[in-house]
Image (cartoon, rainbow, N blue to C red):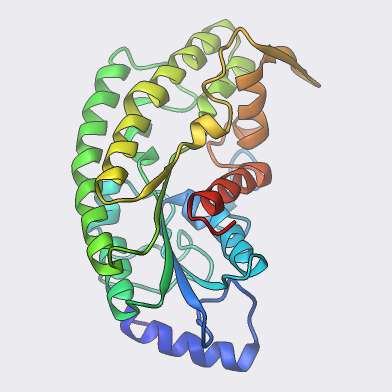
Length: 300
């Protein structure tokens, strides 16, 4: 189904089914909430060390529910696609059905960014919020999970972040132009899941965990913040919200792990890294992200 027909078809389905707040059809008086991004947007949920899939447990679905709870109901149009880098979001056509967010339109030959821009343009004046979460897959090759650290990791991240900056700037400019100047756009970063190496990889893992703090705090998140600011968007520093910047000298006791840095305990709580070696948020993680998005968008 083309994006052009998506809203009309969804409206018909809504009328027949009485769908909840996460369906995509906006009822009279409601607006749309448009979600763009990678597996965090698509709600990817691991079911073990080697499996998983997209789900409605993701933060975008929680945000949609909160818009209803706070009397500003919005229907979610979630264009999220697991695994995309910023360049792929910008230019790669389509998304594999298994990678699409639940309830997403099939945007066929369009890139995710182009599909979202078309949707925003066609529904201009009926959009109440846009969220964007992307960038993790841009730097992930520099920080391979379950492998020895790359000796050039910092140089790799630095170069990747510069490419990310260029692609994100282009995407955000188009989203802003299509949405209009007054629609809240909220950019979302990531918890520092690599802090989980502290408890999963022994003494070498502690070095990786400690180094990851600087990667998020000094390399990735400042660039994300700056690019969102250029289009008048809010930025949710999820790394900070998930206690990723708490000094590693501050500790707490965690059953099964003993005494660990507070930041490490938070990484184990908010992501599946300590449990499965998986970078995605737990239910607590998605809840945390949703709470901060709702706040940043002034919904609550």
